[in-house]
Length: 155
Image (cartoon, rainbow, N blue to C red; front, side, top):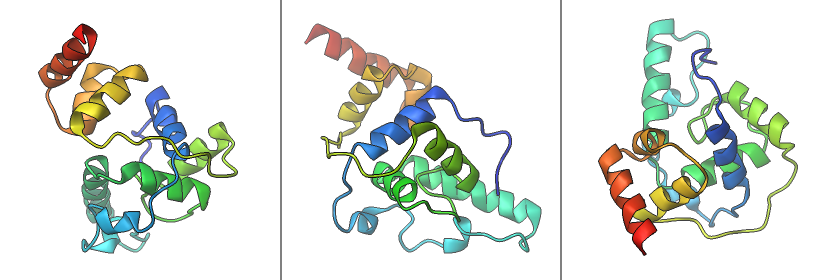
């Protein structure tokens, strides 16, 4: 289900481009936050009650945003042209728009993937993400982001 309130912003396109720059490790899905959860959260149908479907959509996206393999999942969905479900926090319509804007056709060469929270903050700061969006994305405070930025600047 497409949520019209979810607008794709520049950082969504950057995140998708970043996801395409990696080659997911074999078995990446074994570390996915969704493993063992109710698959209907990500793959619900039109016959599900609208309010319940909205709740499932919210639960799925919340888990995706905090997932350690979110970029691998997003890469998989973009490259394999997934047409159902939520992948990397994006639904089918959003994935379609991301693919169209990025002209997705093949996996790009691998690059280093930041693994620690500090590395992720530095990585997102380098890509121009605002501190508030980084905090929301990673589940940290803006003060945490500012602290990492200050340490990076003094290094």
